[in-house]
Image (cartoon, rainbow, N blue to C red; front, side, top):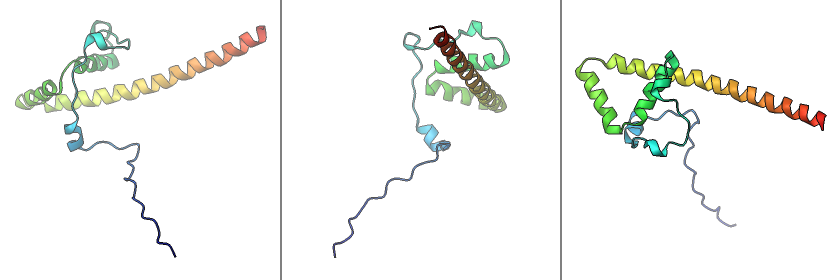
Length: 126
């Protein structure tokens, strides 16, 4: 009788909907964007003016700040007793993220319909 081979347990997989802990979030480092390295078309702050786009303007601004600069924002907000403002900014960013996720779904579906219908049309013409 041969002994059973020893196997190592694979690390437990986290659910795809895992939200990082406060400690994990604090350990993440990032650098500000460099305008020369941005490869996607982003509306300029001047082009942004409706409620969801105001959140985009905030997001745009945040992307050019380092982690220490954003931490300083939290410190200043606490000193000014304006922590509710930061919570509101976070909530607005999340609402805008949900809004645009829906819009991307809509745009993807509309694009797919155009491709399918256009393909059918041009195939019939050939």
